[in-house]
Length: 246
Image (cartoon, rainbow, N blue to C red; front, side, top):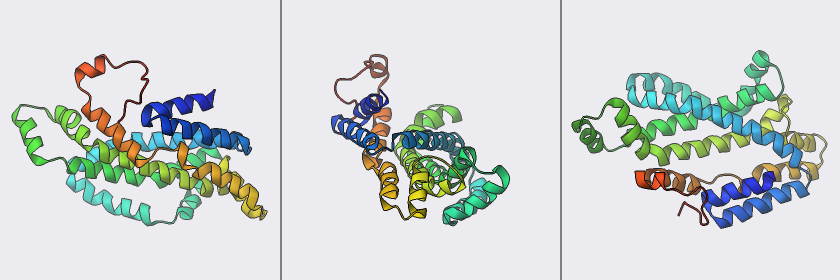
């Protein structure tokens, strides 16, 4: 049932081809015996992604509107992005121990900078004449943010979400060193036993590109949210025979 749901979601977001590819890839994961591990990895990655969005998006908006704060935070983001991934494990283990929860915490810490940076970039790239026009029509700062800046910055923000997701996936294997379960644990056990078959199965489950969002999908979704008119929103069908994103 879960396979069908994921395939239908992929079809509606990205088209029939992506839906079929998602269906095939998920069946392949089940066929190679990695389904249970994949269902452990999936909530870990999605939880980390959700927290990154909840933390990173408001923080990026605030930093875009406060250049002084951005100057202070930018060196910290630089340090976070240049620090090797293994280094994050040491303080997390000291503070939180080992297990899935520390794994989510270290994944959030590692994957957070891109969405902050690209949110700042997207808002700062909004043309000044559009901001001035909205201000001249009496738009409040809140209206300007939600009706002008965020819609225009959405493609860049979605690229940040995509990069955050990719970093979260890359952290899965490293986080398995602190007893995080899932596909990363399969890779780690395979490497430890020199069992390349086991490591390959885990790696295929993590790296299969057909069941993860693509940058082009993020861009199309952002264009859809920008291009919808109010009348289309009210009359949008519950289910589309053709994918709504073209």
